[in-house]
Amino acid sequence: MTEDQSSGGPTLKVLVYSDDRQVREQVRLALGRRISPDLPEIEVVDVATQPAAIHAVDSGNYDVVIADGEAVPSGGMGLCHQLKDEVSDCPPVVLLVARVADAWLASWSRADAISTHPVDPVELPRVVAGVVRAAAEV
Image (tube, rainbow, N blue to C red):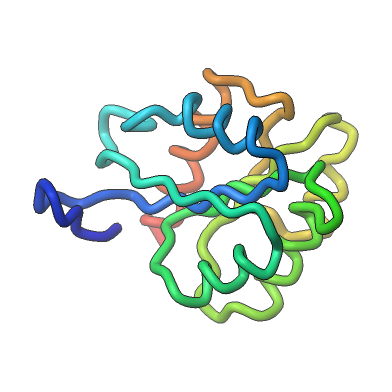
């Protein structure tokens, strides 16, 4: 968690990766300002390319990354795999997958959790809150 400059309180920094502007907006809307009453407000930063996502994770203190498994040309699964290989203190990653059958691919990428694509506004905040809580316990 980081300190919010405007309120002085802690915030959860969330990085959203998708090449599709509408998906990024759906994620923002689904997350709202707070993903759970027991967690701080969130600050969402979104990026549209894999290099931008890697740079953001390298330079920012993100609490969680949400990656679109359907992004092109670089999908969220490949991004997740690369982050887990190359970033020493990689934040948890939630993958958006179009088919539940793709869960095995999420396993290959070492994602911490999956959520459905299109974005489910009830499921996504619940899943993200779960990985944030699990990371805080480590």
